Length: 264
Image 1 (tube, one colour):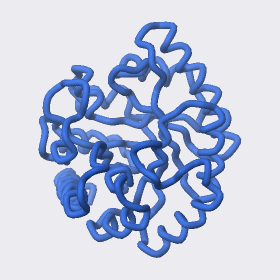
Image 2: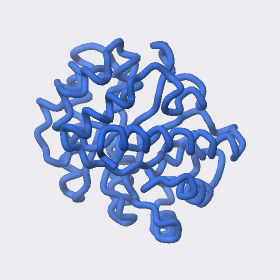
Image 3: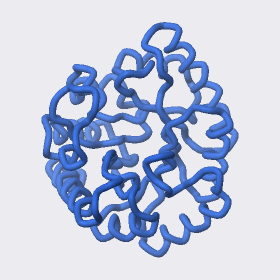
């Protein structure tokens, strides 16, 4: 497994700052944030000028480009994301599910993802979606519905234990049902089963209630070798030492988990 972090943790700073301090914390790679409003990192309307910069920063700081997060399923937006990913050398694009927690909403989400998966095939990249609290895909059963309906090899699951936990499931127990289709992991902790994941510092691995050691052990035993990217939201107004402390604390916990289960 490759340990990475989503640059949205450093959303109040430029991309170079995210690369510099993620590398200093010992991460293997980075997930580039293309999340409007949370960062100004990969701004898709300017992807042609930004993609070469991403490649240069990856080389300078010796960080693998593990993924990109672009939450919208808008076809035009996703087309930009696919093109940017190809140019920068980013293999995985993570998006979010559509709204609507009923059968019609789930089917609309599946239809949209199926069409986007075909575009991902065209570009030679992988499209992932994750269960998200309050959306059409929000737990293991709805994740399985999507995975059963979309057979494309360019489509997989982005598994986030904090959303599964807040859907009143045990993430460790739920993992086995979907682990063979997981292509990316967003990881963070959570205390409580409320709608939001909590303050940025409480999302750091080891601060909450999720058995992340057990979670990583299941991934290891299943032979998962993809990215495990820390995703901390809500830190845009934090100062740099706070962001670095969260990144370092979470990376240390992930490294310890990998060592405990024999992955490293």
